[in-house]
Image (cartoon, rainbow, N blue to C red; front, side):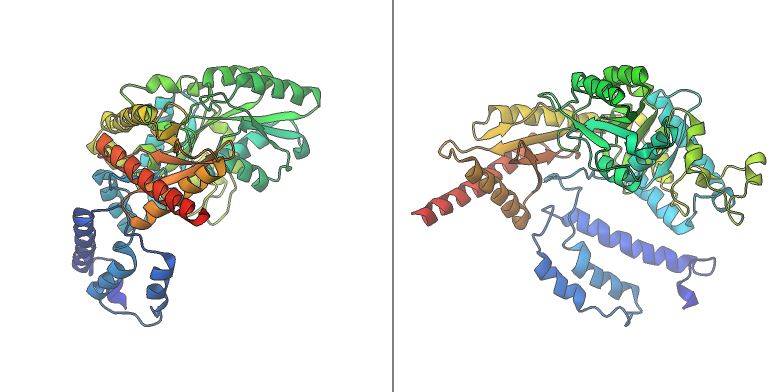
Length: 480
């Protein structure tokens, strides 16, 4: 079995095997006509259940043939222009090249003696990102597995910096449409069930700063401690950006840590047209960015950035076998000193290759394209009597609802929208997301593919309407 180890004696076998895999994926990408086949779990499960993992195929071609059957044929392909569902982006080729390199070399970014140049590349990219944000010369950060981990680490730092040891007194303020990871992080950090205070939003789904001001004042009056305010720069459903400058003022006045969850909106850091929409982010104490959302990077590629590098000490533990205290005085750059993870992939390489091949302006131009597309999509929806669209997009999401003129029962309209989404997914012709607004079911386009056109949007809207009308027709038949 040593013949399968990647080393100097198997380099040619490695080349052949990886080439076979790349050719399979390339062929699939070139011939995929729909984002999904419509396969169900009941259809696919027996194929996987039949496989005996204790009986290897002992042949790469056979394994790839099997993989074609259980994965590649029925995968959901985010590169397709009619994949319009979640915050999954098509990926750029330089990043995929970086992924291939980092997987083969297999550096672990926890300590210098495991990664060397990888450590310095990650640190350079952290400095580049904090510079784009404007956090100042004392800023630092570390790559993470995703926005949830980044938010968790940011709130850990906020908890440790809070002016009390009584966690029952700590409060975290965020808009009612902020990411669920805020609540999850509070629970993981041992905060009480009332620790996260959801605040109302305006008609554009932006946190109401008047409500935040009142909540902070009430917090002080009740003897509680404002641990953090989480401002969102790109909410998952609406792409809305909270009023960052006003939130920064309130955080400074009340001594609260300001965290900006820019997991989605971080693409604006490279935008050629819309960078000003992030004005105020430079005043944050910490920022979450997900390069694997709006920088067109493969999963996973994220980071948490902080204004004051010394706050990262709250995530630091020393182990004699790994990063003993003496390495600090010896100025050995161990990234594990900043991270919640120990073993950690060299995910920074993907962004490095992207910047070195395409440049930041290239990323920004792609993100501007999808934001422009969303603006066009909003105009289509706003003019279409079949649909109710919630807010004009700030980034690249559209939340809308099919509203047939002949039906007035909101619950029946809910069911029609749910049916249309499921039927569309089952057909494989397009994939859209769903959410709730004011308790009612809505549909969502998340536009992250510059190859998507207004013609695609129009076609998908027609498909949705067709499925919804089919449901309503059948519903009327049943009722009669």
